[in-house]
Amino acid sequence: MLNRKNKLILLKLLSLFSVVRGYNILIIVIAQYLTSIFILAPDIPLKKVILDANLFVIVLASAGVIAGGYIINNFYDREKDLINRPQKTMLDRLVSQQTKLTGYFVLNFLSVVLVSYVSFRAVLFFSLYIFGIWLYSHKLKKYPIIGNTVASVLAITPFFAVFIYYKNFDEVIFVHATFLFLMLMIREMVKDLGNLKGDMAQNYKTIPVVYGELASKGIISALILTSGVPIYLLLTKYEIGFMNLYFYGCFALLFLFLVALWISKGKPHYIWLHNILKLIIVSGTFSIVLIDVNMILDRILW
Image (cartoon, rainbow, N blue to C red; front, top):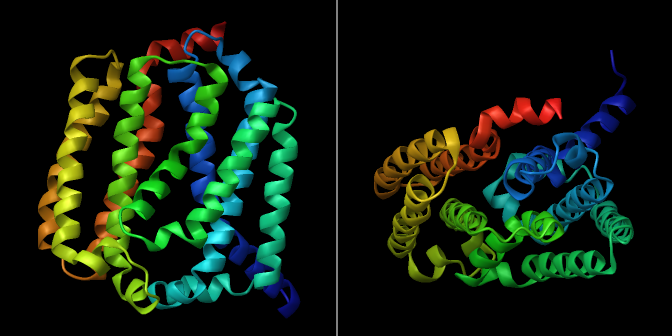
């Protein structure tokens, strides 16, 4: 049995894990490696990609900066989250604001020091990334459309880090990135619908607050229809192997999502819609291996 002191330590560790959203960071790390192996560097032997020290540093630095981003976002949103997510917020508050700020600066500093091993350009890239996250958390997230767009751009920035590293400018990569960006935009806007009460209380000028729920649903619907373009291109123009099954599934899910969106009323419904989007994004990460199943065995043998 754990004594009171050990229970408190365990709860604080859980609180810290909740603040930095460790599960999200793990998914992003896996996604960066899978993207590198199957999309950005398909001609490089598997072992060489996995054991690439520079790639490891970029992925590790990305994880550190993202964790720092979650911390600073949690720091600025503490009052709003108390309204929108009271249970999670109470757990997060087991870690003091001072500790969070210290962790934020330490994580960002170590991340920049790490990427200095790769190049000065990497240092500049991650420094701008850190600044962008702070500016979004401090200011930009309170404005409609701008906040959603910047949040989506920041979410795909870790993939641009490995994209720049491999210097692969194939057209199909931009089509994949466009689809992911649209899914992230939709997720951010659905999140705003679910957070309407807290956003209004804290004077956040999100789309539902400024223009209303119907306008927000209209924009989301337009984004869903727009996402049909990259889905169509990926299914018809590019060779994506068995990953086409994923995009057929996305097409069906997004149709159901669109129907459910217009009959949704209240936070519980928007949470379900948000979870559907998370399923699409996370399953997309692991579906990357379906691009060339035979390549998995071939490259392991190399």
